[in-house]
Length: 580
Image (cartoon, rainbow, N blue to C red; front, side, top):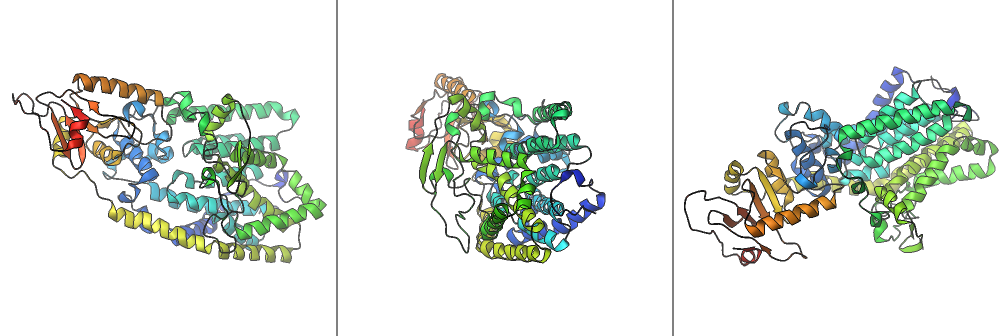
């Protein structure tokens, strides 16, 4: 049984360790709630492992193609490294392909279907684990099953988690944040080992989830250790740090130069949190109107607590004002409060926004901005404060009011939350079904000419000119290259080394101008707004053409036939682009 607390709801020193039965119950009760929410919002078609078409757009395409290439490559050192993108490539980490599953499924890729996706399975697992960890957290707050069920519902139907399903599938793993909060409230018997495992897993899912798990771990260290135990604390810090570095190396985090992790000082605050983040629904709320925002906070700047959540926080604030016991309960968790406040400050950034106005700009040294640019989507750091507010407010309410009153208020809050968020659920369901069904049906591979299958027999590499991340049409060619065992010099990545791309384009352009082609490469030309014509010296055996709308250069296509023909089309843009 869990301990019951009368005055200190979350006193970790008196809480027993978990038992296997607790985990089973959590998976049954909380997991069923999470699965039910998945069924309510999402079409089952996304779980089908061979249905990849719904992923062939925007960020999901980045994740799927990163995995699709990775599975067909031989194992490299480190194991997460990948040649996808050639010079601009790096590892499975930077395609947001959920390295935890990519590494797992690559181990038996030979037995998988040719087109295999695990992203739908991952999302379902995340919903189930969200419910399970929400249940375990609720058990830390109260021993009443009715209250546990209500709080589990509140934490499982998270606005910040469900919004991620629109296209950021790795970031649906908010159960990692809930697990970190659980470890903070109820440290396992072997807490250092548990934190090593959780931090390692988070690093194999997504860097932003890693940042948040590390933040809660820091609060846990401050909470568990006293000055007299500094040596034990230092031992745990070293163990977690070494584990993290080892896992990050294995996954391929260090395949890019250090500066590539941030992208530069100008990126910090690009997706910052608005000061109205917790009470601005943005869209899809029944009781509160949307508030204006600046472009910088237009997406990542939301962490809407819901009408029920806001009422819960307001009631907790009243208890803190009028109840000495409530203040005592809250003060024992000063490490988590401190960490949550720090995350809020970083999330808001030095470009402070309220509604559609910038109310404060704080000048920071470039070195500081470069470091902070690692969290350029800083609005995501509100996720820990979001869950801490809901969980802490519920604990204060249930532990500092009469039982019947606390349950009645919590039930009303959950009902209010459901009513307020029901329009959002309807809109999300429509968006999810549109993305995973209609968009999947609408996707057609543009490469239909027989030329492509013939070219795959002759060439080992597809090269875009110029090479750019996510160049127009890259998705179809990346799929084509992976399916035929070819390399490709473009892709879409969360982080890239711009210096490498620049050097690659300089070398490539010089070779094209001299006619010194890579005979094993098929060239695909596209023109960006800032690019002029590309001077290319065409040989007699080289083919220049427009195939399925793409301008190509196939070196030595005519071989040693002795033909004097240069294959031109009547396409004017083609003549502008390639100069014989």
